[in-house]
Amino acid sequence: MKMKLIVMCFIFIFAASACDKPVEQRKYKEIFTKPDITAKSMSDGSKMPFNNMPNDDIHANLRLDSTEPMNVNKDILNSVDSSPLAWETPVGWVEEKGAGMRVATFRNTDPNLPIETTIVSLGGSAGGLSANVVRWLQQMGLKIPEAKELELFIQKQQNFQTISGLNVVLIDFTELQPESSSESASMITGIIENNNSQIFVKMKGSKAAILQNRGHFKELLQSIHSSN
Image (tube, rainbow, N blue to C red; front, side, top):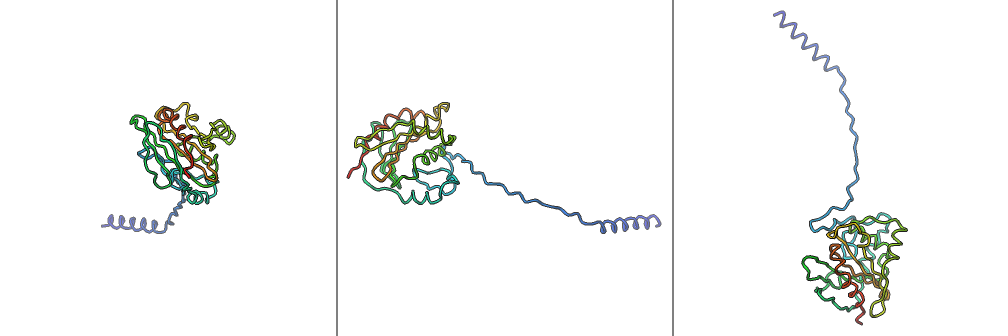
């Protein structure tokens, strides 16, 4: 009985001391992380869209640079030019009816090296040549050159005229992919000055497909003219 009382007293003293012990204060620190803005590939090899870049054939799936005026998107969407155009479809290509912003869409008949070519006509400068080149580089996930290098790249591109005398600049992005495999995604674009509008012709596919169809692409560019 005496031993039992001693044990009970010990438990009482221990419990009382525990109650008197100050409660430990735990401090928490909130950590905010920036969202991942790197492009994530989709099943078809394209990139997930960024921010509010308009989902059109010129700027689809591109990251809007934070230094670019936000009203550029609205201006582009409101600048579609509906002036009638005509062209000659290259041999081995199949023309599809235009949809949305597209005036026309073309595909080749080679299942091993497929390409897709689109024509879009926009009023005004449509953002400017350098800005559009940067957007297309972002679309392909290629490194954006420094300003001077970008300017030199653009200056080295082909300039010629269509059969109706319209000025064309041909931007061949395969030139920036000398070490890329033939299966790497690539693109070649033609920008035609048509009075107060810009005609954008874009061919995309693998690097090998672009190189194989580059001649046909240039033929298409040279044949484009106003059908008024």
